[in-house]
Amino acid sequence: MLNLFINQLSFVENVLKRESFMNIFVIMSSAGEILSLGRTLKQYRENISLTLRQVEEVTGISNAYLSQLENDKIKKPSANVLYKLASIYRVELETLLAAAGIIQEASIESNPPLMRTIAFYAGNLSDDDKSKVVEFMQFLQSKKK
Image (cartoon, rainbow, N blue to C red):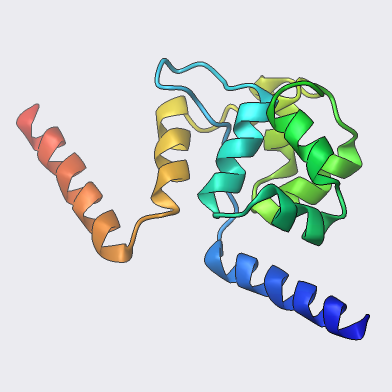
């Protein structure tokens, strides 16, 4: 039993090392619309390369329930479930509460949709790739002058 606990603790530490920042945005589609809670949860989970079973091991939420959430069969989970998922996915609880329609989206509207989307995908980039993205954006900006 102690070994199982130690293995789970090690797993959580590895996940947290992979994602050292908190995501503070809502996932947007390419058309600029806010994605459903299920699609949002799935994208955050895939962004940190976790399976449903791994999330289950860490959070205690069954993978069947997680699957129902991701497939939008369950639209308004409890705040406790969202809190656990926000913690493991390294995202602000407000983001998931807004995606679930529990709070108004306007309360987290401080970042424009494009910036939130860029920030989401930047989490998987190396420092070198991030520099290249910035250089490209500067190039695009300079073309407008």
